[in-house]
Image 1: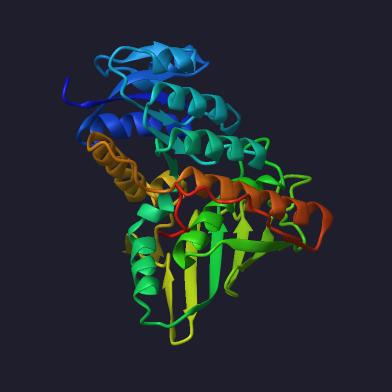
Image 2 (image 1 turned 90 degrees about the vertical axis):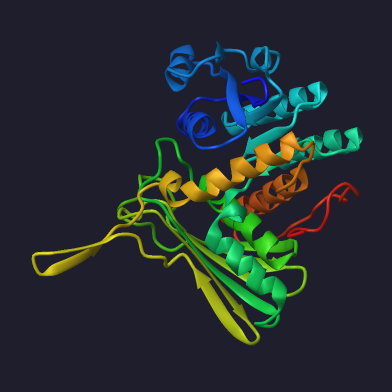
Length: 341
């Protein structure tokens, strides 16, 4: 056990509990050393039956627990800034779920704090970069065989939205994944956003503008459109099509099980992001563990987390006030490369 990377998991909710399971049952080279959650019963339930795990209500106590050499942050977004800064102060490598920090000002403080260290400690959890389909599309775009990318058409649908989900969260929670995926696939920053909304679905809770349609402009003239529909009612769907000068490529149409019986056929549709992207989460965490054990930090950077926050905020302003909103990023520190690199 001493040779394994001891990980403190902050947050034992839906995402955190799944990461605890993943670290204990799927990923090699790591173990859960500590779990922190304000709800101690939830933390105990998530870590039940797993040897050598200390349970805490204070995340800082978990960071200081015996055997902790790295941190996985899966707590709600507003708690991320304090946890990231505490990990930096202790020199602990971090995998932080998105959003890195909900607001761009806080996200910039994280960028500046890590830049002052002069080395990377954090990987941000944009797991689509680890999805097999997205990785194939990225390789295809990078090799140039289809020519210059002109457009990305994206779809993001959920069965239903959780209680308390707001119209702004369609952009800063759901579409934040498309924001990062577009930056990474195209290797470009997004420079402006326009959000429009059709009549809301009858399936949407009262007061929620759902669906929405976002149009992003990039620094080299490509366009990215995203349909986001978080109360579609039938399944969890994510698709992306790249239209280039010499061809197009689409991901997200992969078939799961098809059942044929009594004169008909039915195809399974994933009902949850943890199902649709299970393999991507597994690869993401395994890559983080492997890199951390080598003394390296790879994957999406805190700059990627910051850029996503800035673009999402511009999208929310467009949603609320109408029209096109320019994206204004701070100067990029030398520690961070261009998106997609």
